[in-house]
Image 1 (cartoon, rainbow over the protein chains, first blue to last red):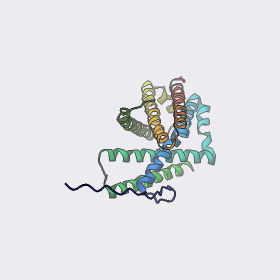
Image 2 (image 1 turned 60 degrees about the horizontal axis):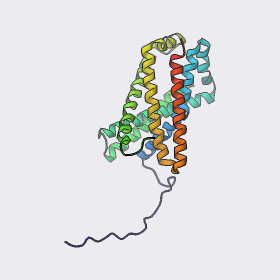
Image 3 (image 1 turned 180 degrees about the vertical axis):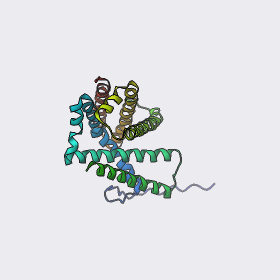
Image 4 (image 1 turned 90 degrees about the vertical axis):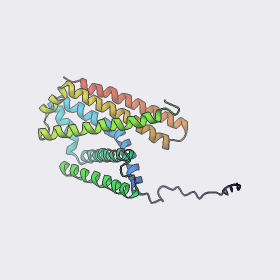
Length: 132
Length: 112
């Protein structure tokens, strides 16, 4: 048997500037999944607990809980949280589909990624219309 | 902190089970709000007075907090490279999650 040629070891080009690489759509959905998840952990959960606690305290508390929604800042914060939740759920459903070996080819996975982005933004738009 | 080769598959599965629990709860809340045609204080209060709803909501929050732990831990494992920094941040996340858990019990059972 002929000796196997050892591959010549040469330095590989290192080009890992994430901001300079054009990310494929599934990568964008994936990083937004992480960002939205971290946002929900840090801001979404305490806001949710505060809202439910305040709203259940009394009739006046119920009004207080919705109070922030009368300001533009309050609306923007809720809109950001709404987008994060919607995007995170949809991107998660995409993950579950991939786990079940649904749509793992390149074309379907691109389509699904685009679908996650677009549907999340459309649902967020509906929330925005309801808020303003 | 779990180490070794055994917790990955368990957490992978737990992440998906908790995700399904939370998705179903979200749909349930959506259906309830649609059914009522919006919410007011009286129906909101009545909904949270039911023990069944408190237990289901607690199940949602328990899923959420465990799911958040796995997710935040994975993020920190990827980006917080120095061990001391990663461990500190993971401990901070655990403390916050335990505080959220206590707050959750107070919110769900701390009212009439």
